[in-house]
Image (cartoon, each protein chain N blue to C red):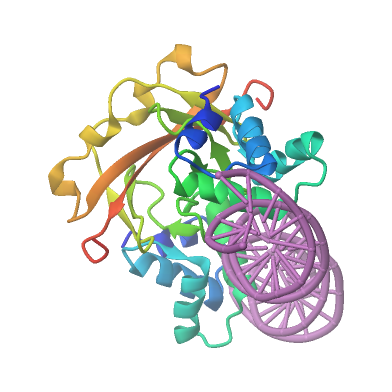
Length: 136
Length: 136
DNA sequence: TTAGATGCAAACGTTTTGCAACTAG
DNA sequence: CTAGTTGCAAAACGTTTGCATCTAA
């Protein structure tokens, strides 16, 4: 729980029941959900919410920088409500579930300038892959 | 160039003109291509090759472990023929182009056992993000 | 009151699949 | 000869968009 809703409110973001429910669903869970999973859970609280609104809302949260989009698995994107605290991801190759992990050090500092090829490097993400207890 | 074709032949993989052309196109280029880009280049050498065959062939190469699939950007997957030599990726947020980089150290060793949550961790990939010289 | 959010359904880009024809071994 | 591969077209999948309606501020 990282108070996503508070942060969005604090930014003066126009609040609607749909947006609140999307934020609550995303923030309440510690695994990272796909857009469709968010929609399924949101429907439980607000039956008339549409898939398009969920997609649009998630996209806006990403643009605001309050949510991170994870394209880590080959299938649907997953959304991470924990955009402020630096962390990395542990992905199960079997079921696609994602856990946050916090290895030591900042990966950005490990890429020497002579390996940046003129790029302006601004972020680094580490994805650890393996099998979760259930899948192994 | 990493002799992808040789490796595939060495595994007794049934060789056809389509498969050879896909392997050549993928291996000949140092940027990492999308399936559609591979198809476009393959058509230049073998006009009747179909999109489905390119997709299937790339998928098989991935299953064989000779090619790595990169879902790094929100768009189409890209394919990396260099599945042996350990390396990381530098992705342009503007145009999606991907470069190989070789930072020091093995990221796997940076994830302590108490952060593995029962997972059998087998791989770690670092994605550096930024803007390439053309996009910045 | 009104700029902006919603729901619907249709479009979109990427990838997979069913099936008959073809071909490497 | 035959198991495995191909091309085609259509379907599947995740996601985005156009537009009329509705609503938070």
